[in-house]
Image 1 (tube, rainbow, N blue to C red):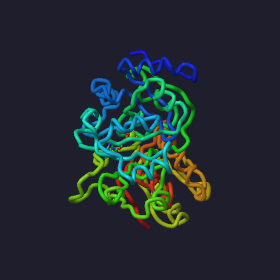
Image 2 (image 1 turned 90 degrees about the vertical axis):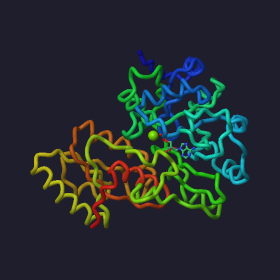
Image 3 (image 1 turned 180 degrees about the vertical axis):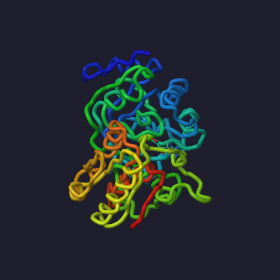
Length: 344
Ligand code: AMP
Ligand code: MG
């Protein structure tokens, strides 16, 4: 298949036509690039799973561009949802509702719930509006790899496998949406993201965080979001997180780098502006300053992919604070490291 690259806003109609005909289009959103298909067409949705190599029981988020599109997708709109919608839509908050029967099981992974988001990115909104369709859209990467935040990274993973890619530059948040389950009495964060726990708490008063987010699925924890049980965000290199005071962690990482280099391995380090000058490795990248976690989030997936570009065998990274957007950063890093954490 020849993948057409669209870089002109005026050409979105041709992308909408592809979607109406049951094809796939990768589009920028404010979080990461999404791989879109008509959410109500099971055979279009099946193409997403095939292009990404995604396990079929990992459900998809349905994207809408106005509130009228929500009603037919869900069984009901609880009061909590109305409050959250008022505060955070359009934006990087996905809400899990009881699904209506029109949502195909291919989208829900066979669950009785459906995850819905109203993105703020103008291209994605325009694409939904022009097609007139709710769009199922996971991140536009090969399953398991770091999510793409530029069109170039989508091309790397999906060129020749999908009809079209819209180039809208780099994404604002750089980590995916927060997934919040509102089907039980107390809302539960299933995935931390752009709308933080702190922001939600101000509006909701009480909410929970699913324990599997930080511990992984060890022991007898059952996944509430099926995505939790799969490898995610992993570059080709093995990633290790070194947790502790940043300066001491930097020294520990230098020791580890030397050991690995002596074994003939190429070693990368993900540091910060504060620690970068202290680190020695084959490639040292800084995610930004610790005082601006938004920048670190924004660059995280791109940095992980840059280590692959440079053929690193191993990557050591500092740990980041877990407040605000830091919760999403550490959740993604812990998964990319398969929970390989060295505490000092
Ligand atoms: P992705 O679109 O690839 O960034 O992943 C979407 C995330 O939302 C995955 O972690 C899914 O498991 C989760 N998700 C989607 N639909 C549901 C649902 N109905 N219930 C719980 N989690 C969901
Ligand atoms: Mg994804």
